[in-house]
Each structure stands twice: as C-alpha cells, then as structure tokens.
Length: 233
Ligand code: SF4
Image 1 (cartoon, helix red, strand yellow):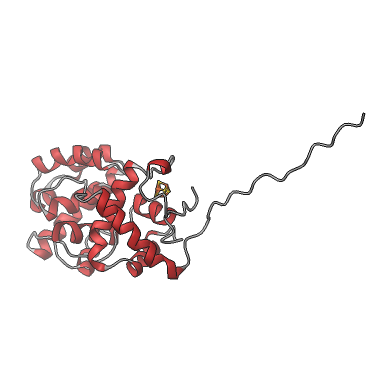
Image 2 (cartoon, rainbow, N blue to C red):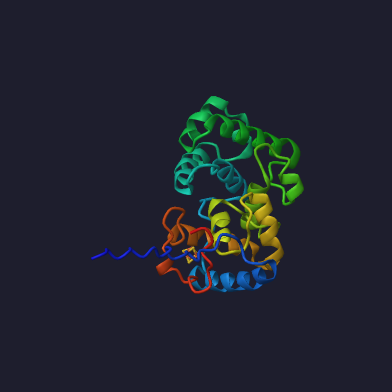
C-alpha cells in the first residue's frame, strides 16, 4: 500500500507585533498605562537614596551602567566622608576613585563628580541649579541626569526620564519605536500629560524590575497584559 504523504502544513504564524502602535492610538494607550501604573505602584519613588539635590545629582551620575543598589552602598560611605560640594571638589581624585570604584567606569565617574562639584562651588554657590539648560552644562550631567534631579529633587517636570527600563517597557507597550533614549523621550512627551512625567518614569522602572524584566517578562502576571501588544516579546 502506498504510504500516505505527510501533510506539509505551514507552521502557525506568530501574531507577535514588531512595531509600536499607530501614532493616533498611542495617546489612548498611554492613558491606560498611566492608570494601571498608578493603581499598581501608587508610592513609587526614586530608588537612589539621597538627602539633598546635591546627593541625588552625584548618585545619578554614579548610576550610569550600574544598579541602584550598588550606588546606594557606595554613596552611603561617599556622602558620610564628603558631604558637601566643597568636600567633593577638594578631595584628591584618587580618593574619589577608590570610593566609587565598585560602580564601574570609576575613573571617569570620579573625574565627573569632582568637576561637577567644583562647578557648583565656583558658579552656583554650592547649590544645584533648578534649570535644565544650566544643569546640562555641568560636567558629567546629561539630559537624563538633569531630568532625574529636577523631577525628583525639585518636582519640576522637564522631561521624561528614559532609562533602560522605561525605554524597554515603552517599546513593548507600543508607545514608541525608538531605541534612542532622547528620541523615545520626545515620543513619550508628546503622548503623556506633563503632570505625569515624573511618576510615569518611577512607576515604569518599578514595573520593569518587578514584572516586565528584560530577559523574561512575566506577561501572565502582568496587569497590563489585556492591552499590551507585547512588541518584540
Ligand atoms: S504584558 Fe508582558 S510585555 Fe507587556 S508590560 Fe506586561 S510584562 Fe511587559
């Protein structure tokens, strides 16, 4: 008897989305995300421990390519030994390098926090300026760091902080296509109400850590799974 030909059924196509939602749907999506985040993380705050705008500025510079937990361990000793911009500006760079070594890129970071502290002492009476354009001129301070300081320390929403979590989640949720943080921030600023910018970032970071991890997002546990297009997941 002739053998039956094995049926060559094409494998079921994945309906996974690979791009963000169309621009006109993003605002609606952003409103849903904001509602869920507010319900899930009402008290989310910046995870970097700080007692002043100066401490937050230094901690944020140190947090590049480093976990907040590690930064908090390092800054505990750093701020105890060198509590003011003047102390940090006059400390030998070798001392600073030793203190911040475990945050990675420690030579650059030590140089940045020393020069930044010096600029605060020389040009701003030792205070952290409350102005984005002035802040980004300080050594070691980029737009993200300035947004963190202004938003968290002063409550001034000057932009949306896009770190690795905020960028990843925003793409998965279809809010932006951009992998570049500055471009993603521009997209988010267009679709989020200004008053939500600060909380949005803190809450997205919490959600990224708790549920929507980089490697294995726990979609089945996620409160946004009903409306999340899971772009790229
Ligand atoms: S459903 Fe999945 S991809 Fe979407 S936000 Fe939740 S965990 Fe992330």
